[in-house]
Image (cartoon, rainbow, N blue to C red; front, side, top):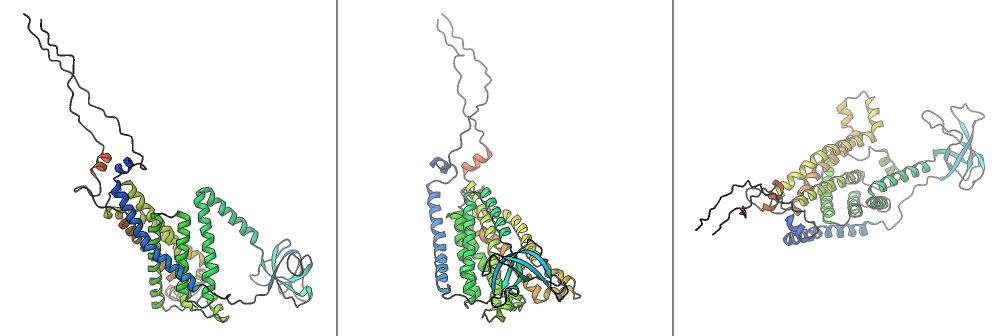
Length: 446
């Protein structure tokens, strides 16, 4: 009779190593579940889209109605400026009876107009600060058709068309090379903006319509068309458009208050004074406010698109993130953007008014008197109101995007993240139950 001997074997067991699970394609159902965006999230996205449309459709309809009602039915009044022709300078002559600093004649080859192909004499600019005309320059002549041929023309400007066309072509090539189809869409949007400004805003103001109302309708139309063209019809574009229109309204209200309290007349600019001299009936204060609104639109567009994109990217990374944390993430991006954009806006206005600033630097008046004069105060109001509008656009757009995109918190104690997302972000270290080993315990019966 034999006894069965059981020999326990001590084995060192290596920890289980699990293979990493490949990331699910976000476009599939599994990918949506991995991101916390299953059927419920899809339904919520559709509800958000309908809400954005419900807000944008009335605004777009009001813009279309405004365009129809304010569109000028007659051609704007025109001021006769004389016939302009082009020419090339072939020589410079002195006047027979006057010194060179008082009179100079340019021998020009006329290239357009009634005398095209003929070489004639034209009066050249003289005096302090007058541009110097040299042989070979392409110039613009103002013609008095009733005068004799050699007394008919005066040089009034240089031809700059070729240089501008080259710069425009370089600009378009750079935009398309970097942004490709988006760049082409942006260039089309730029063309639409210029067409609305020259075809609607300016003629409507000259026709006597309220400048602020015309500028508001024109700016809304420009924002809707250009943003959809440049960024595509999407929920993100709709949210950015809502933020742009709200911020633009706030800028217009603040500008109206500042102009009223600052008692700005709008007549400090020489162009406004010329319009009044030509008999054009335009509210100069309304014109000042209209320019402020249109000037702020371009910068607001950039800010709102950036903020909406930032919030949308954070939301895409974690769809369960609550509104409060989503808003905080977007505002952190917005602070850096505001710091750079406000400085850019102030420097842009300062650069445009640099000759004016130099003139006041030479003045013996004190700084307070210079700043509070209407000519400088107008630029200060434009700068500060535009900067405040940019600053306000960040929380307005960020809060709007967070309110429309964020979902509720899904786990107490760790707000805004589902258990799956917490596990995925921290990394799972699982201990699986051990499996008994085989073959080392033998029962033998002999």
